[in-house]
Structures are given as C-alpha cells and as structure tokens.
Length: 217
Image (tube, rainbow, N blue to C red; front, side, top):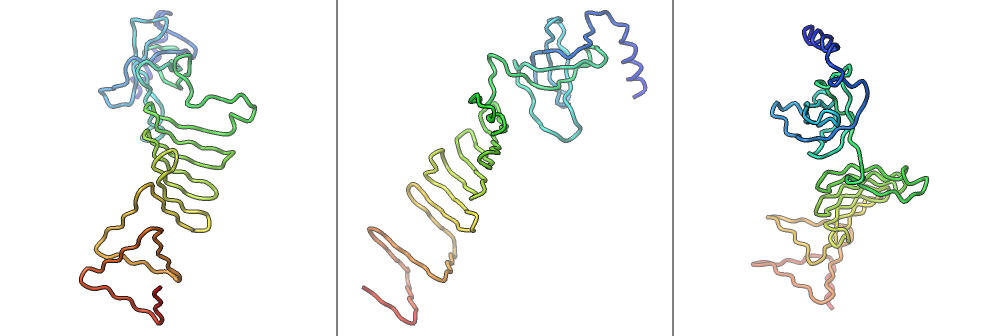
C-alpha cells in the first residue's frame, strides 16, 4: 500500500501529455478483463495510441453493468495520471440512445426509471402508474401493481396468472390448462365445473359421486 502511494506521487512529474487534471470522455475498446477485476480498457481522445485499463467502483457489491466495446464513457484520472483511470459513468450520444424517449412534458422524467440490458431485458419502475415491471427479451412479463401481481407470456397477456389485492387468483390460457400430478385435490365451499360444449369425467376403474342430494338433469 505504501509503495503504491509512493509510485502515485512519483508520477506527478510525468510529461503533460500523459496527464489530464479533469473529467473526460473516453471510448471502451475492450471489456474482457483477464485479471477478473471487472475493468474495461478505454481509448483517450488525445492519446489514441495509449489504452489504459480503467477500474469501476465498489468491492463485492454494487451494480455489475460492464460497458460494452464501443460505448462512450466518462472517466477520471487519479491526480491526472492517465495510467490510473476510473470509469464514473456511461454516456448517451447520437448513436447510443436512452432506453426510453421522453415525451417532452415536464413530468415525464419523474414517471419512469428503467434498467435495461444490451439485449433488451428490462426492469421498469413507473411511479405514476405505481407499477414495477420485469420484461424478458422474449416479452415474458411480471408486473407488480397496487391492484395485482400478474405473470404474462406475451405483450397481449393471452396467457397469464394474476393475483389481485383481495387475494383472488385468475389463471387464463390461450388454448389449454393442464394439471398433472399423482394426486390433485380441489376443495371449496362452492365448486362449479362447466363446459360450454362438452364435459367428460373418466374415473378409470372407479368413479364415485357422494352427496346428501344428487340432482341429474
């Protein structure tokens, strides 16, 4: 540790072209760190032939979002030394756009917060709708709202499972619902089984119907 501080102090006398006492923009050229330290290699605009490895923040915690090759990042140098570079953020530009376009209204930036991966999987926090939505790249979706929790297979929610704030559970499917187990038990105060076109009951070797009163027809 002491030697590291001495080395840092010694680099103060390096030539000015290797020093930058400011925050600057850089471009990521490599994000596969063979030392497994989570660093990215960056290209500095005024030193195109020098590509230092830049560290990101925190120890065994924090967000693990390694910038992609070609991403524009904001970097800071330790005491202006370009051999010690830290990535402090990523930048949107004319090529790399934000995950959501603003509608231009003053309240728009307050509505949503989005975390999105390069492949398009995202987590959306909507403070106006009071929802949290997790969406996969295949549009599988989990939505948490004040009214219910919903798991949907696609954007149209053609097949879904929903639990509302009163504890009611709804399971709906586009084609069929199948329950398969060695034993299935359904218990309710009132049970209704209805088939709009047809109902088949097959008990295999035995079918038993037991009640105080049985009405057929």
